[in-house]
Length: 351
Image (cartoon, rainbow, N blue to C red; front, side, top):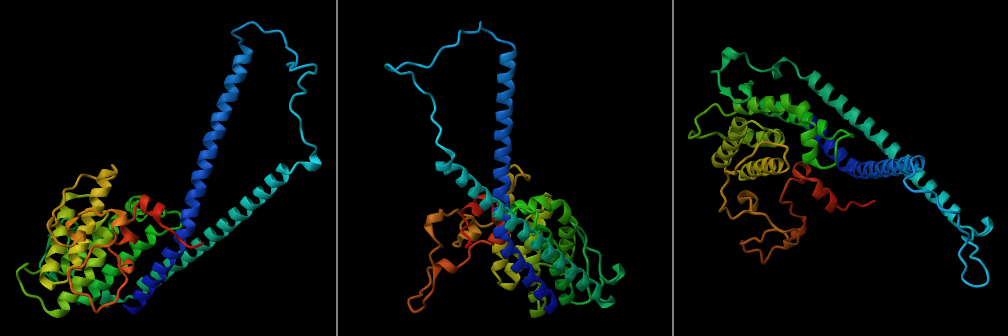
């Protein structure tokens, strides 16, 4: 498990470092697209002008001489001697600056691809080192349990099940952080969905194997810890679920974990999943969804109440007169997973 946590650290570090490069690459692509559209419009205008010259609608007019504003005719446009013209040099300097920036971006992109491939190789090596003791139990060892993702998967211990859930979560994460993926996390979720769908289904089957007991049963500490650890995998996989049965199962299980363990972060994850499904539906990239979380909850993150950007973090009703804290450092949404295009526009990163 320690090796897997270190791989997650490498993944997080890579995603954070590569975000600035992705934003610059996206801006460069937008600039090239606009330039291409302008060139196409200019070419269309030139073609239309040549066509009108070949097919004149009116008779040609007699050439006229330069206009007279007194005793001397207008000399026309006066060109500055080349020795005094600075615009050409300015244009060359600007072109050189653009070339240097393009070269730096290409170099950073190549480095990002190399680091991404190294992390993929590390994940492959980690999977290869897991022996037979880490493999799923035979179907006849546990009672069959049907889920919207397929039959539940059982392992010998809770810790092994959590390890595999986190491993497949890392596989999903590395796919979404590919150097060619968009910088906005929710956009990357949609682009990579066809590659990560099978991994998300496996995570659902593993998490189902952790909860084969009645929802009213009491759980021991090790089982509760395993349920809490499984929430991270359900979060990464859940945001891309489109099937209504899979979504309903995910929210139900996350609520059960919050109720059985008292770990209210599970309820926040459920609310985050619902928030992502609603955002995808509003953008026309997912089926419609209706919230099921408690709309009257005091925590805005659970209730789904929207807050204005300039409103700041929610206020605490607890007595904190003797506690010094910085509200700006508190994180209220998992922006690494739920960020949208408008969040990337507001994001300010140091050069």
